[in-house]
Length: 211
Length: 188
Image (cartoon, rainbow over all chains, first blue to last red; front, side, top):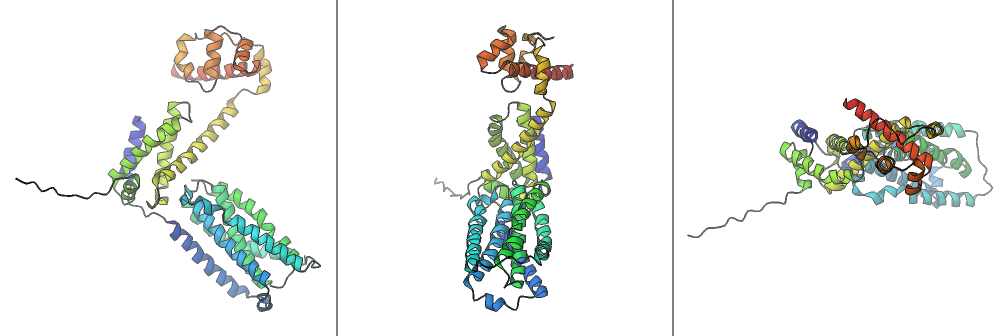
């Protein structure tokens, strides 16, 4: 062992103090509680669509909402795993958002086939996108701030996971407000922009999650 | 006289238990973990880096990273995958930075046209006088210089023997001379 390495080890050992380790359960539990509280607050402020109770009788709508919620949870879990250098040694769970995303796409396809004559309503498309982005901003910033205290070895993918989680949360809240809108509109202004948002998250993660 | 043997139960000392103790503030346990980690990682790095000095540099970076990230290990899962994940991360950082430096300082391949006219078989040092430094060069450079200077081959003959193009041999020789010149000038 070189002298420099020996000296470094001695220095680090002398400098060390008790440190409270972070567990995956504590980290993700904190995030889920934060998401739940924030979502409840948003719904309390924005309210829900008067057509929601009728929409909840449609199985495809219920599946859409359930899958959005599952996407929020799974993407946040992926971001949590990626906060640890070794992904907490649960590598298979990292990919959980992908089958959920595939199921979501299938449900949206089925919902569109139910009403094929349904055309996109673009009158408030940008407004929807802005709302979703605005809703996602605070939890996204919070999650990035939390992850900067950790040690991700895959910062870019972690950033994308954070944005997918928070963007899905924003989409979920807005979907409850727009229960009766057209599926093509949903796809164009609510869900497809998630792909662009994920790329932005990828770039942000690469820069912000270095340590 | 009968001796009664006290049956003392001790828990096995593993890297996981040492690291848990270290997280509790035990400095000796922490030093033991870092020393064991160094012994684990040195062969891993030696296979992937050509210079012993680079191995030590990267090893020290990894130890610093382990120190910085120790709060992300809670002792509830194996230690080695966690340590190796950090090691791979820092090694990739080093290689990325190292190769981008090499590319920045490397001779432009278009300039190989000018190098081709130079006689790369002559240099201001003798091969024997700087053999130790030559052996420390990366990649095929030591073999190329040996073939040029000790075996007396031309660049064209070296290229044919090593399955390279003549201009690639000349560029590699030029880079080797540059590295050697910098090292030997700094040593003076």
